[in-house]
Amino acid sequence: MATSQLAFEVLPEEALRSMVDLMVRLIEAGGAVVIMIGAVIAIVKFAIALGQRDINQFSSVRLTLARFLVLGLEFQLAADVLRTAISPSFEEIGKLAAIATIRTLLNYFLNREIAQEQQEIEKGKSRPRASGPTPT
Image (cartoon, rainbow, N blue to C red; front, top):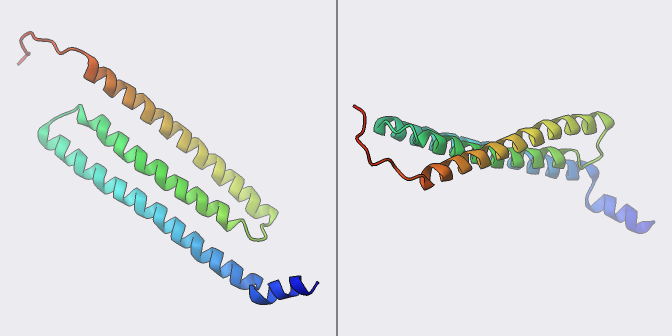
């Protein structure tokens, strides 16, 4: 009994909530930074592809952005799970379940699209190029 009272004195619930809240904010910020970096890189790659008038590079731009989105969403989901780790209410658990479902589905479809794009790029690289005259 004395041990449980000591635990409450050493780390009160309010202090624990404050620490978890700080961690949640840091993880969410990390996810937002990852998504922002991905968007900046994709914009730069897109501008380069436009300048070179290389339509084939657009798939690479989409893949780059999708990878960053997937990673950013993972950070956001981790923050949501951590947020409900301290004395969650049924309302918080319900919100987490809805958010987790939406983010997991989005993540699944992004990963599937990444795999399809990669297969198409590999098929395009493995095809022999026609050696005939190019249309003008």
